[in-house]
Length: 74
Image (tube, rainbow, N blue to C red; front, side):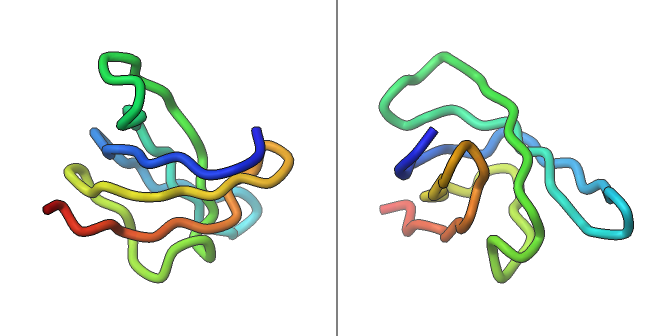
């Protein structure tokens, strides 16, 4: 996976790996409604913790989420 997706967050779960904080996100791509996915995002990819109901743009590099930003829901 390379590029960016616009997604709707349905659920989140925080967890740690070797003391690093990650979030498991249950998401639905805006361009592929009805298909839920689960991804893992490191804490440093986004300035604030994601929550259910957020609409995000997530950026990937080599299959890893490198950044996420909250989009206006207008």
